[in-house]
Length: 215
Image (tube, rainbow, N blue to C red):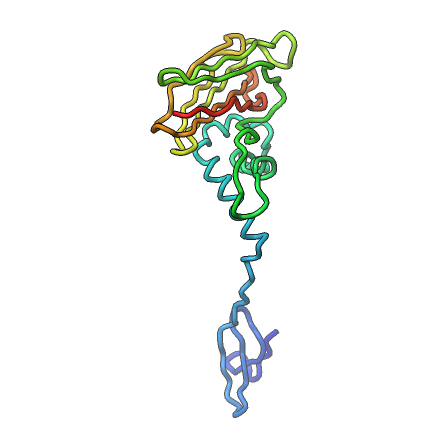
């Protein structure tokens, strides 16, 4: 706390706001800026957390149009679907124990999460510039309807390009296809599938990773 010596226009000692008052040995009053305390922010744990967060955000950012569908229901009002997706990936999909070997396990990254059942059988195959998807209709024995929309995704993880469809086919349809996103020979393409309810779009199934293919 600062202390005024001679009224409001006089000198003072101590700190007030962002300034410090000092009385020198010769009796002169001096005011100087308060020294900022630098906080250490480069501990190993902090560096590691930033590296992990960078891996996740670089991967998730191109997927915002999908994430906004897939996590709308579980994110609630306290967190955006994007932030929720990043949180899940940070928790479940990071591999490695040191900064030099941190990586994403794509099979554990989620595009959606919800209570609708996933198909027991699903696959994706590359063929002549498209990816063909197949899945079983389990609507008679699960929490899901035959009319559920199917969300299909192909993600070029090297170029950060995506190709997707929402509702081009249904759970009962059993199959669908997507053109490849922009790709070059050798690029790694990831494939995902999940369902979305027609009657309540916030209700989805947890996404399924159907594997990767090489362009």
